[in-house]
Length: 407
Image 1 (cartoon, one colour):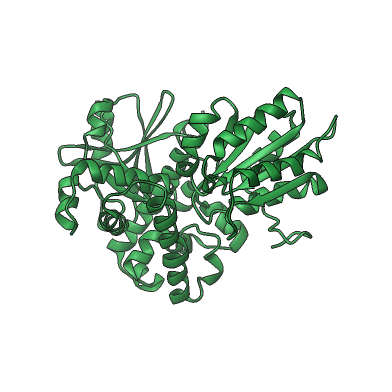
Image 2 (cartoon, rainbow, N blue to C red):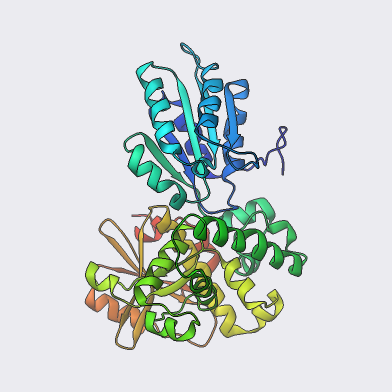
């Protein structure tokens, strides 16, 4: 589905936010950040299309050498389009790959501020992890962050016609969606173009990782055990490379910042106890769990136990990506032998969620135990006997936090 300019006609919600901010008087640098292959470049180009000749797009990801002089040259070219009441836009993609980029951007931005030049600036990068050091150290107070997360079920259905079962299995990578009819090709694309590129370029290349083999093993483990609670000591017992719990926790944080997998902490009402808990492993896109298994959609659907794990993981991706966008906080809960799959909070609203996905009958006694300990919490069953899986995945998380009627 393409528009007349060759770009996808579908514009994600963050694109409309960016359009609105660029229509305002120049105030802040707009930073568009998120995982690889979620459409950051496409979204920026869609927005720039409305500015025609007054927009300039440049990427530091091209093969030729880029340095701070390149930034200044792009900036000067964009300045020529902005004068008086005529505003213009400069978009610099993958700018984090230029050493010392943030100091140059700060200097040029401050020059324009002092000269009242109406030049809007967009910076974009593969993940907040790649941008955060330059933003917080040099550009504090000068930017707004627009986070672009993994594609939701609603978006994948609207653009590609993906069914609920297909979304649970294939996840939400738009670039991989057209390959779904050829499973081997789809799996190779996810492994080579998404997983390997993210791990090698966004995690290992741009962070100090003393044990890269251990990080890769941890990633594989998190994909295979998505939706399950594992202590760090138990993880170490399944990993070949020697390490310690502090290293594993740090590597999970790096993988989470890259939009791959994360560890969900236990809810206890105490921050100290949460940090010390065993994490619940969670992929941030179900494609990662599927690829690690090598199963077909048919074989996955026929195995009720595995399919139940996939469904619960899909609910987890929906919640985890909402948490990454700042819409809520996310935990799990365990008391003795009783568990609650997910605990979600925003402000004073607290919600306990149990996913009943069709595998062996799951007790909801955990919800009752949680309510006894936290009487102000709401409870929600997703799946059999509760809100449908599809309805939940199509809804903003905040709807359930406020109650079924949005109150």
